[in-house]
Image (cartoon, rainbow, N blue to C red):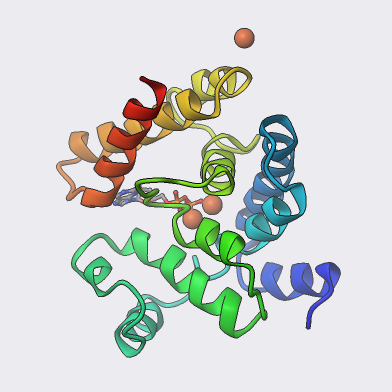
Length: 189
Ligand code: DGI
Ligand code: FE
Ligand code: FE
Ligand code: FE
C-alpha cells in the first residue's frame, strides 16, 4: 500500500517535469471542483494523481496491456493512440498502485473519452484535465468561466472543443466521445 507521498513520488517519476506540472494542476483543480460541486475531494485528488500515469509509456507497451487483458476495452485499439493511456492508467492504478475504489478507477478510465452517464467524479476529473491552470488552447478561458457556474456546461464546451479540433484535422473521432457530448446536452436540457 502506498501513502499519498509515496504514490506522488512513484507516479511523478514516470513522466517529464512539465507533464507532472500538468498533473499537479489537475490535482488542485479537481479538488476545487469537487468541493464546489459536491464530489469527494480525496477521491478527486487520488484520481488526478494517477490520471496520466501511463501517458509516456511506450505505445507498444500500452497496446500489449490492452491486448493481453480481455476485460479492457479492445475497441480502443482501432482508434487514436492518445485514447489508450486512460484505459492503461485504469489498469495500472489497480494492479500497481492498489487502487480498489471503483469511482476513482472509472474517473481515470474515462478521463479522455468521457462516457454516457458520467459520474460526478468522472466529470470533475475530466473537466479539471481541460481547465487546469497550465492548459492553453483556444477557448480554455471560456471553459474556466463556465466552470464557475455549471460543471456540465463547462465539460460540454471541453468535449466540443476536442471534437471540433479533431474534425479540423480530419481525425477519427472515438464514438464514445460523441455519445458523452450528446449525453451532456440532454442533461443540460
Ligand atoms: O492526457 P492529456 O493530454 O492530459 O489529455 P487527455 O487525456 O484528455 O487526452 C487528450 C488527447 O486525446 C487530445 O490530444 C485529443 C486526443 N484524442 C484523440 N482522439 C480522441 C481524443 N480525445 C477524445 N476525447 N476523443 C477522441 O476520439
Ligand atoms: Fe490524459
Ligand atoms: Fe491529463
Ligand atoms: Fe461568471
